[in-house]
View 1 (cartoon, rainbow, N blue to C red):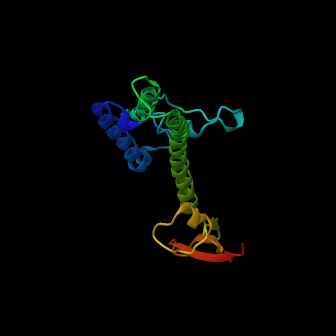
View 2 (cartoon, rainbow, N blue to C red):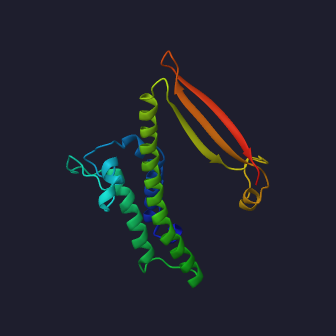
View 3 (cartoon, rainbow, N blue to C red):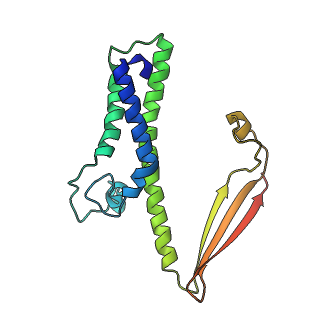
Length: 194
């Protein structure tokens, strides 16, 4: 669709989309804080729910707007507007339907990616706080399930990846503080039978 826009608009839209992607990939997580005057960076505000049992009020006002967060929203809105406008010509109705489906899916996916980054940073912060406050007689055990591991090649087709037969891994990591206060980590790998 971007190639259907006027040449100057296409280059600008591609530049803005690339900038938004780079921002989410690198800078967004750096700016997140427990409390921030920018609502996009305020973890307490962003993770709060409208349900009373999960609602947290901020002790500050959200008076700052981030230019890059706004540009992310603006580029998605501009892309939707360009798509909906009559100046974009499609070769067929099928192409229009495919691109509409992609647009309808992409915008919530981008918002979901942003929310995932926020949860990741919040969880890492909480995990670091727990580890820092561990007593000598306490252990933090982190358990996770890992995907099947049978590396065939650097790049595999989707069919090749999901069609693999193999064993899943259950990974456990035990973190504790030693008598000297240093962090000790023990890694355990268990193969499961599928």
